Length: 409
Ligand SMILES: *Cc1c(COP(=O)(O)O)cnc(C)c1O
Image 1 (cartoon, rainbow, N blue to C red):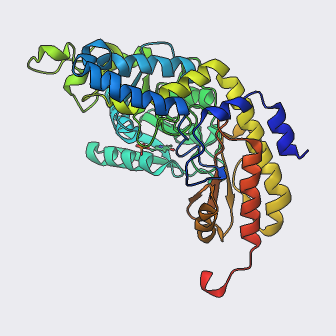
Image 2: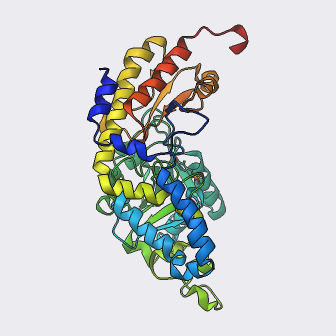
Image 3: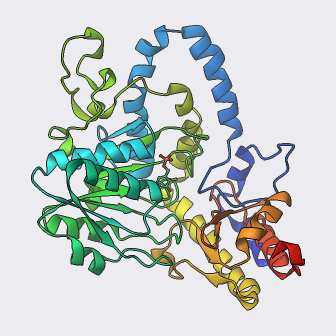
């Protein structure tokens, strides 16, 4: 038996793969982009349909009173409990990660009035950098950049060197979107707190992949996507976490009726709702909140530690396979070798990867390309088998080896 077949045979999560919809006509033989858009579960296909016929179609407007108006809070609590390590009342589902970054960074400024700087790293996800820059420009603040290693990430010494008593908030990704570097979040929180600054984590690449302990780590604020490892579907809404001690003091700039105390009183003037609800602005996107519920339930069944164990086994196999099959062909590893510092995906670099990605996709092998020349492999522990990973990597090897015709160069 090959190593991949052995790992599959002994994988305690192997049966979870059967709960995903994998038999679409456009056959994919190796899906390695679960960190960008997770697969749908078969349960969620049925549940979204049932939501439309029974809940939307049947309950109609009554659904808001019966369930939907509170769903951002109740589902936020589930996300907090199952994947964030957050006690109830601190997590809400809303908007997109980009919009919640905006609200939370402005919220951090409201908690730290008079402070004039925001810290962020050069290799953070583009939207994080752009939102920080736009807020800094609007509010006349300075951005303090960390020049992080694109094949690693932000280390605590680098952070300590830029955080000062002028820093309002530090904005970092917990798992770097390109390298997969896993930040020491508790150490980052301590470093920020030593200077009285707040820590805001982007959890887009960690949630559902790496166990999180936001309450224990003393993280102040966090947000992240639900369409990656939580399989919420394209554009499903994001979540926001606000540490309990900050809830009462936090203001944000998009005062809407859904975040007002007693929304349906329709009164003059905005008064914040109690607790995390104040972070809401408009009507919650209920239909787009349904699909992620099944994945949350699966993770609740197995626990994040089992998910992480399989994730580490998948990325370890990917790196071992890359060392034997791909580095001899000039491919470089652009992710941490130490599993303790690695999230759920790995990136490989090769100058030919841009041209090669469409050929892989046409063979049903789907990683994604990240400029300048990275191929990112994001196996999803609940839906990706070890053999599926190796099938994809063998296709990558074949394509790297394939002699290029002149017009393809
Ligand atoms: C995927 C991702 C986003 C995407 O944000 P959207 O507002 O959903 O487009 C943001 N941050 C990180 C770190 C991501 O990986």
